[in-house]
Length: 602
Ligand code: ADP
Image (cartoon, rainbow, N blue to C red):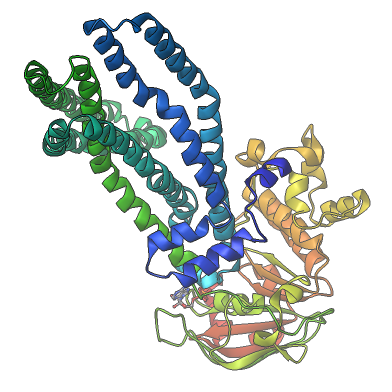
């Protein structure tokens, strides 16, 4: 892989990722300029690609000339005919054989350059996604971002190939055909200039009709596959309600709809395909008649008829290739812009130059914190005040939408106070390099996110130098020992394979183990709301107990046991802390918390 990286490396001291962002910034609003700029350091590869293309393709251009010359020699009884034929045959054979290495070189140069830009763009996008603020990610559907990294970059790659190479190829093809024709006969050249575009445009307009019915068919096909997937997912429900026949009927109606579109597509393709083909052939016949007439009139040689036949076909095909290219170019330009939206987004977490923390105690002070989300001016946190001592566990309770998760996200540094400040050990968190702070923080989200890999990899995520003893200790503290012992491959069991079999509780404990292994000073824990059986409940509770011991902990609590064990409870309502104290204090006070508990108990 390293070798390939070297092969694609650009000339000069260019760092692809930062140069790509710079290109976008410099040429904002000019997608073609951006695209050309992305290839800086690779232009020589394009020059080499063009040269090798010219050599590789020359056999195609030379063949009509060779054929015409041989016919001319034969028909004019040239005494050197045999010698000439041998020369032409050797020449053409050599050109044909040279095509093989040249085609290899051409593809290699072209591919190295375009793959470099493709990979560079993807890398730049991936890095940018890791820098963009969490609010950006929340607001943007993950599917759209994925599609930018994969599909848009692919469209840009296609655009580059088309722009730099297809257009050049087309120009060379048309150029050679017209120059050779022009030097031989001005009359035929004029005929080409008028007839070829007319032929090409008529052909392409018929082809577009075919494309339209193709799109309709594809859409219907996508719809069908979505319906089939839905049906498969619904099988247990369908069967439980004895609705099998209805489902089969529904799907077969859809299948017939697809079949009908497919039939129409076949027929339309047959019709318009043959119309397009016939137009092309008719123009060829017209060309033949015209050049035949010129030969009879003596203005061209007999053999040149075949030469013009070939070149006319080349010109018509190349002009129609230009027309076909247009939609690809439009799509590519849209993709260049779409990638730019992400690469130039300012909504990033800025850490450079901020205060770096080497150690963290975990003392928090929320001072008159106000916060609202970008898309809504309503205050989600309204002058919130809270003090949390080192090693203390604070449980947040309150109705859904009260602002509890928002507070947790402020502790992580995903959101910053609009007014007021969140102080960590006396430092304003908005002035701290969050990456240094987060080394001392572990987050256990409400839904445990496990990636495909082993249980071991999931636990040691981001901690490469963990000893077996440390791991065993963490597995024990997270109450995972029995579960791991039950798998034949123990910690090396793939989560993907058993992902479906891991229960919600087991996944949560893996998530807790992942937090424990970091040995953090601060824990942010969003308790899962789903009810578990009492054994799982107790196992998780013990694991949480081990996790939060002696660490500053923020919990959105749903379990009574967590709430009871917390050092302090903060009741959040309307973005404010309306009650604060120990469980006993709040129960005695008979306020908001007491009422919440009474309602739950009933
Ligand atoms: P809780 O965790 O207590 O249920 P949240 O902190 O999730 O409450 O939400 C507090 C308020 O902020 C709610 O009114 C919610 O609709 C709003 N909110 C949460 N996330 C966003 C977001 N990304 N954009 C806009 N509003 C949001």
